[in-house]
Image 1: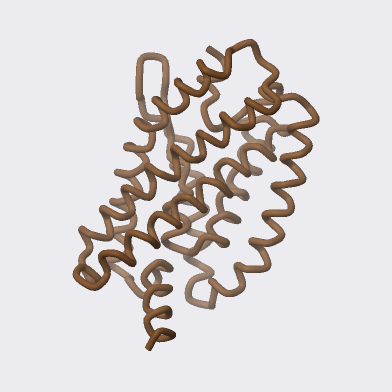
Image 2: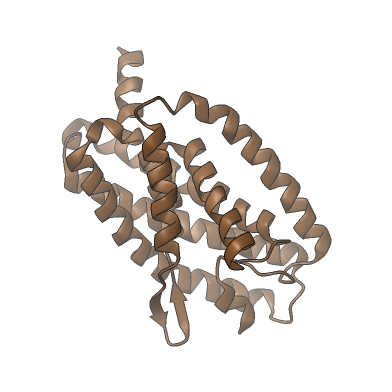
Length: 234
């Protein structure tokens, strides 16, 4: 089933041309906002980390892991990037990875760049970071310094971000699907497989975030933002 096997990296022709062009406009607008807001997340210490995050996501996205017979998944990286460098910077990191993959490695269609960026760099990052920020706000008083607790938050956030990105795909297909598969079939398959993909993503995200927290907690955006909010409230 071509649509399903494309998973999050949509190829050309999955949705019709007007919808593809519309999402290119949406993606460009979203990235302009992210570029403007990213200035509040970055400083001279965290800029190198953003570059490392982009490189890491690029490398890991090239490695697929089996989910079901004939179906494989790979790291999307939205929650990981957002937790480490912030949601706006994280969205830019994922978008850069997607552009390079599409133009140099033919991983995802060029006309589908808008939909892929909206799904993975906007929806995935926003849902992943929103979940992480909410969960950390709930547990920080009791487990603020607990690396396992932060790992659990990263795991859940990655699962949520992956599923939400998949639902973005379903919405786009509902609006302008150009293939023969029915919407119900696509929705059921995307939801089911991306829960499994999200679990794999969650494990990778949790292990990576915990490693960074143990080594340099001062560089993790989620923790820095929480400390900043506490100072404001005080």
